[in-house]
Image (cartoon, rainbow, N blue to C red; front, side, top):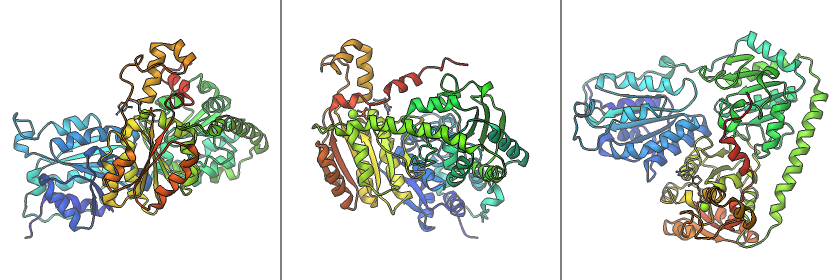
Length: 582
Ligand SMILES: Cc1ncc(C[n+]2csc(CCOP(=O)(O)OP(=O)(O)O)c2C)c(N)n1
Ligand SMILES: [Mg+2]
């Protein structure tokens, strides 16, 4: 009988699942696993820090709708993986982490004094959907299947399987039959019940002013076309969670862009019926509460989600639907075709919203007239939008940098935005951009990132070079922790901050950073580097970066005071309080 290793058994399960890429750093303790991946033609994409592997897997999963797989080795490798797992769980990306651990005789339970060992499962259990350890070769396949079942149930997030080195690498005289996914997990999307679709259609047709709020669930369900069809049939305005921006192109008459925060509040208060799709109505959705939303008794709320634990968690519902969002919207559209709906009346209301968007846009765009050097940060996302092809994935990272990017970028194509909207993790964007480039190799990726954020993981520029990933990092350099400095100035001397716009260098606490010449850092790693401070020169610098055909870094010097006064900060501050309404 042929011999096989635990690592090989797992690799075969991943192969049956259609996994094509695994992100992680190699180590002897799971040679049996990654050498089997390699043999089976599954590519191992190797960053320079394990947390990057988690973000690459998460970004890849979100953009492709496939499973994102990362791996890390026992002790330090897993310790480095942890922050990435925390973030990917928060963002709700479908990630499977496979790790090695020391032999079970010394770690389960911990004997004390074992080398490169800590309670990996105990730790990851607290920060993920599911985490288990394999304790004998006989259970590798069964637990591998259990992990994959968990990956595909409920809200997407992180699932973890810990496998001892002795099982990963050991040779066992046992033939293991690999099951096909449909033999051990649900592979069909959950269909909605006809009576619920009917009820939803009645409620939404009868309403005077229905609205739709879309969360990341719409991205995971790939329901972009269906969402557009239902919104058109209902003539309902569509707001989104921050993470789901662009699920309906922001060029659509019905889209309510996230940067017009006051309009989002107005739409949510005007509506007498709300269809909530794949969103938890979390803090960045203002918890679905007044005064940001109309009180629930006056707004019939329908919530659709694949995860029953989310339904009605933050807002009382008129109808709770456990179903796949795409199948639900498809069935709803069929129903709505035969409903009588006063679309003219609704259209008038929506046009009013569109006019409000245009007015606010014109007000914001006044900043683009400012041609002072170093530049006003408003230029950056605006120039990137023009320089990169339509449909380019934008990754936004940093404090005020991400806010500026959100206010000056229009989401025209669904699922082309990545950030850490739920966790605000500085530096995660560096690797998210790499994962995006692996997911969409035919396009460049644009990553607009703060100088503080980029400083967490600049070594990954070399990962882009080595793997031929065309990421253009546009590093916004104000030489400060801009967002926090602004906050701090108001805490220290609010009146002086308002009058002078900023405090002197000795009046703030540890808010300034030294300079890193990111263009030269890029060149040192074999990437293209540019540096620009004049807004008139930014388009040409971006074009040269793109024309280089490979990874590039554009170091952009911005006016540090203007940069601190990012738009919309007051809303961001408000959001940190519990809404007053009930
Ligand atoms: C990993 C991490 N550490 C700390 C913070 C707290 N924090 C939020 S914004 C910010 C400053 C960001 O500086 P930078 O990336 O340069 O962006 P800027 O605000 O200057 O545009 C900090 C420290 C965080 N969000 N993430
Ligand atoms: Mg900064």
